[in-house]
Image (cartoon, rainbow, N blue to C red; front, side, top):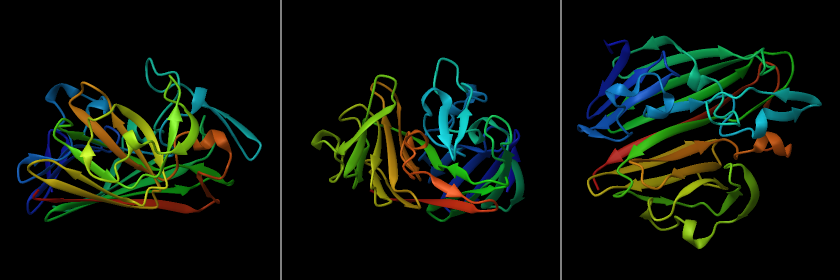
Length: 287
């Protein structure tokens, strides 16, 4: 474990990770054999999470339409949390400082406590990051500290580089169509043009979609390396591949975008004292 400019540096074998606990518990760098796997964070990025390499989404992921939802007869109204974005998104953890409670040369454990305000339930979130010779494992957890049941959606938001050279393979049989505000409107069978059953270019078609009934496995392929993704307790995969940008995102989530608005039991419900965790494993290898 090393500290550099306030950032925690982890290393193990061929892997290297830079962690920014003060800014959303985010990853600024994840590399393998001097090759960036997550998009490198530019020196000019400052504290903007959208410029970092990966951040946790807790206690909810993606957008909540107009910041409103109901749960157990309770009406919840959340404030806008991103300028020029009318719908609050990605929860609170990505915008808050986390505390490092344990660290070694190749691992770190962070915690963040929130809620009890506009988000009515208090909670404790945790991240455990572990490097190995060719891999990174991230465990993201949440514990309900409030006296009533709480809905949660957990997810990771990694940014990857070189979309023009990258191919994605993943079994994603269904998908949510969205409106002009990127809000989900209808779940359908995945159109053939959006299918990644066979590895295909991530830049083939612009996407900002949440795929449903994902089996928790995905493969990213570049000419010089491959990245296997395995996720536990994540049946949903959000793919963000904007045209003309130098990045793309493949985001494991525990529930689909808009789940809190549908009231169909999609979000995980934690009883008082209950705990929920997702695990995402990134394994790098030669192409």
